[in-house]
Image (cartoon, rainbow, N blue to C red; front, side):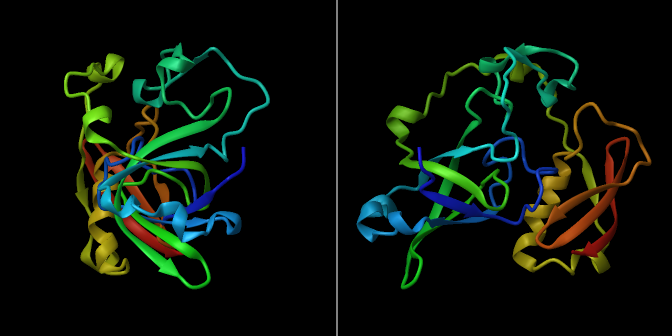
Length: 223
């Protein structure tokens, strides 16, 4: 298969990216097609849909061998589940699936059709294999069961973000950043209070620590 496009986001590394799409709905991304797929006819009618599916590659998690079981971070990294019962990036074919909101379709004289999306959970430069429209009558299943994910407590942290640090981030990116931090970007198996973590976002290394249920941003370093 050939890549058809790449998505460009504010995430320069994997750490801190929301574990599922649309967990932080304001996170923005821009999809640019590869040169051979820049014919505007290829997206004709897509603007009529509110959401789209992205089929993409875990390009930073490729493996030559695969394991039938994995340790999902959501379970603390201590419990094994079958790889096909999880959304782990460590899969036989390294494929990811995300539903995102399609904000607009723009035509650029040089780059062709550009898709602006929100709610993406992809790292900057992630290659995309395919794009399909989200169809509510077929894709939405209100009574679906969530398996072991329904047993996990979805804890939200209180975020303390000093104004003198927050103002360094463009205003439209401030709320998404705070929401990401509130979801606790640390791996579930790491909960050592006092440790300073760094999250790369929008050109900054956002440094924070967690004490109980309070996350405090202590510094921001321009990358």
